Image (cartoon, rainbow, N blue to C red; front, side):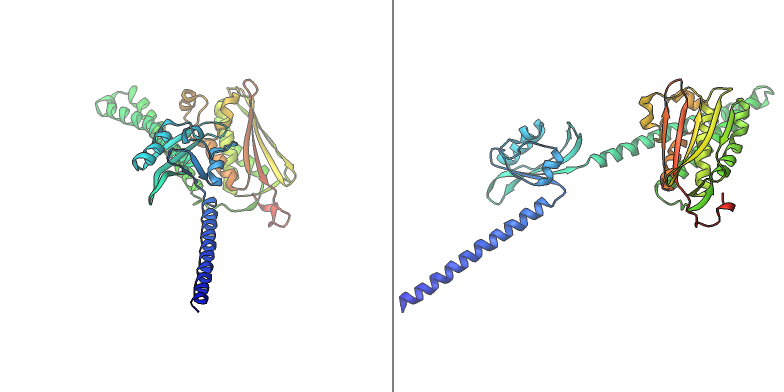
Length: 374
């Protein structure tokens, strides 16, 4: 009887052992699935800093086509700081946080937390977080603040300087006083334009500005925009020609499309030399209308084209400020075109003028009464 009881106990023990192994295997499988499902890259090293495990995200983050397991940390990522952090974790049980610039085919900025494994386990672990976009946005914000400060400083300094001069006695000068007052007025207008453009851009970027979708007659929108800039064009003896068929309609915001054309025309008038020529035309291409604003100005070098629609980007900084531009017009055009489900691009070369292309969706036949829209 004792032998039978012993056999039954042994059988139950074996069953429990098998169950424990299965449960451990399942737990390991779940852990592996969780780690592989992480967006962050993870590796585990042995006591000497050799990588023994890693997840899929790490390989993608490092853009590595070679094996990672079996290599030391410094061989996988060329960084003495990371190698030292892994050694400190393995030998001194010290955790470290560092940020690395990864060069190569796909440059990245990575935040890394290196820590000892602990729980009587030798070796270390590291978690890699891609912060490239975060750092880019931080730089954009810093650049934006710096640019706004610079753009505001110029008119504010001029207004303050001339106002102080007038208060110091120049107000009684019949020749100088009117000139100073005129400069103060022009600089205050520039300041007002800059603030308005900043508010407009802020509303567009935060999607606070609600744009309508109506059938808009392209010819009428182009006509109204051209009328707004004709006084400035006449002062420079610049001709504006409209070549837009009357039967072209886009689905867009009435004020939005007019502002897009107005900004492009205003930009063309500013940079086209006196006695220049500007053409506005439009064509239907499939389910889109392509609106073009072309000038015979000096043109733009290819290196500037990719950045032309950035906030405050100027091809010729000194000349642009002399002309009174805020540096935000083309950025507003880009945001408005995107908000209206369209796009904007530019073609230009030195000595060959510039052509800006705006594409917007065609208004469907049943989108209201297009005959009266615009």
